[in-house]
Amino acid sequence: MNAGELLGLDRAHVWHPYGPMPGVRDSYLVSSAEGVRIRLADGRELIDGMSSWWAAIHGYRHPVLDEAVRDQLGRMSHVMFGGLTHEPAVRLCATLVELTGLDHVFLSDSGSVSVEVAVKMCLQYWRSRGRPAKRRLLTWRGGYHGDTFQPMSVCDPEGGMHRLWAGVLPEQVFVPEPPGGFDAPVDPGYLDVLAGAIERHSDELAAVIVEPVVQGAGGMRFHSPEYLRALRELCDAHQVLLVFDEIATGFGRSGAMFAMDHAGVRPDVMCVGKALTGGYLSMAATLCDAGVAEGISRGELPVLAHGPTFMGNPLGAAVANASIGLLRGTDWAGEVARISSGLRAALEPARSVQGVRDVRVLGAIGVVQLDHEVDITAATSAAVAQGVWLRPFRDLIYTMPPYVTADADVAQIGDAIAAAAKAG
Ligand SMILES: *Cc1c(COP(=O)(O)O)cnc(C)c1O
Image (cartoon, rainbow, N blue to C red; front, side, top):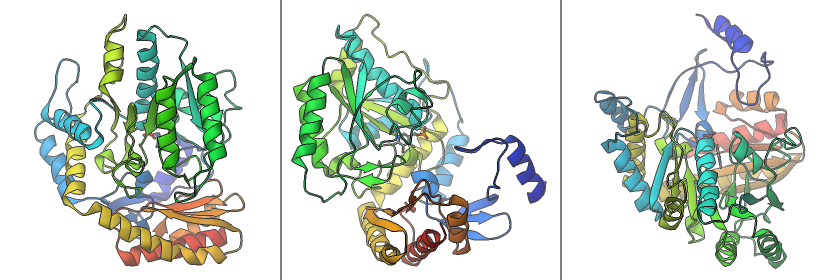
């Protein structure tokens, strides 16, 4: 099929993320990707400023990751996980336990499902402890936790389209978004808001769920790790579990292996996904500490009743092991710091572009926020004209490039973001 035929069928039949049907604008047709470059069917090459939505931290077609998949393919691509187990999954879970300090791992196939499992763990924990009234969640506004219904219920109520789903989504407890700025001084007034809400609702709260330090798809905002320390203390004081969603931030993106490491606190339950497999395959994990697992095990139904068909997928687990191995074998923190300073320099000129409200960088994440909704088509094609792939949303043009992105490519991403800001 030629490009025109493919794009015609795509528009007519294929749903894309957050898209209408039939499609109204053409997607870019990709033929391959290698290193940090995506090759389009028409021959153009684009530097990937998005790491395919936080996932491809080592870039594409990495020889070590390719080999890990090929090697596993030669043994088995999948076997069911009920009653069977295998080395790739066991090794992966042991590594995640070692990296996070948590005790138990539940593997699933996507971030949203890992959040569903996290919520199920928390609700079941309190049921098992004889406190079924503790079944609501508290979160701060501006968050994103996935697109299935429990995760949607704790997404930002505006961005998450809660009005559309009134009467369907469970009604959770929201506090205002945390004050912005990783280095900003802590706002005692906001600490009072957190304390008041957790105390007031403690009888009905199963858990507090937040993205630590970086709120991703809910608004690309950064906050002080101090608020996570406060949440840890408040949750302990009021018998509420604490869930960290590190699906976007895990594996080095914010400059720490996990964003929670900036705060030096551990949650009771944690989700990882996206970069877990280096962007190769769809896999996520929910981790919990021994207390949560014991609580569940002492209940009337002493099991966690969840079991995805593709749980523990050997190909995914093998490439996740290889990706984590790559990370640990390199100075990833140095690479992220290098990209961070590259982005700081490269995004500075965007500050003076008309319509730009804020420019912020943390770890290998760079964000330009406009004072208006981005014209996605115009901004995207301006970036593509500069040889860079970006996917703006709402009022945000942002980048989280692969950790292997060279300095010159980081500079080019900065130019493309400035061009996108002018165009959009
Ligand atoms: C992407 C994301 C999810 C959802 O993951 P999927 O794999 O898309 O289901 C959940 N939480 C956060 C913080 C995310 O960035």
